[in-house]
Length: 226
Ligand code: PRT
Ligand code: ZN
Image (cartoon, rainbow, N blue to C red):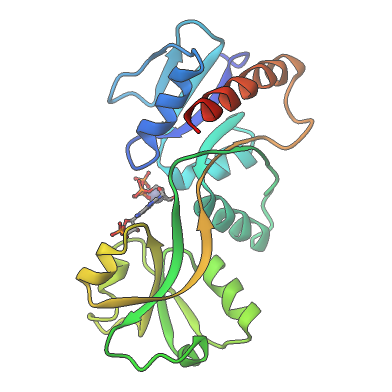
């Protein structure tokens, strides 16, 4: 493992958030030596190590204090926070900045042939999703008794496979829904990538000082793009 005095930042190893997160770190002057297969990447000019992991692991790594910061989609962050609160695990963190990439929405979609007249049409039905806590919270808010069925992949084929009546999945262009004969009906959460850190006061002064030096540079990069 890496040296404990270095600031540890978790980023998605390979996926939709990886390139933009690395580009942002480089844009704020952090030189990185990333080797594809390695879990850890060291910065050559700052006291920073990157931990390259699956995005699903990033909220927990921050909330458990294994890393100091992380780049994560708000959808995944909120879902993991709800899951950890429900299971009695530490779920504290701070959002440092909302970023300008990773935009998507978590939506309920139903087969185009379904006679959908509103969320009440889902009463008593099963809805396939990778985000059961966000979906159950939505059902609760709406006063609907429907069941979230957890699927970690291929959520969009669940209705055709007879596994669920509807789905709740991330949407960006809508092409995946269309290709699977599904119609987007309810947006339940809007998400972007965010930069988070461990809860207030849990970082030593030196690391916090480094973070405080990095964040204004991020603001500079974001503003320059606007
Ligand atoms: O391997 P690992 O677990 O790290 O990656 P992953 O497969 O879980 O995540 P990844 O890389 O697919 O997504 C990472 C994050 O990117 C998500 O948590 C979101 O915050 C964000 N994001 C933005 C998206 C999308 N847009 C998106 N369109 N994540 C997933 N999708 C998928 C969606 O699930 C569906 O399958 O793309 C499809 C829909 O796209 P459209 O354009 O057809 O609507
Ligand atoms: Zn994932």
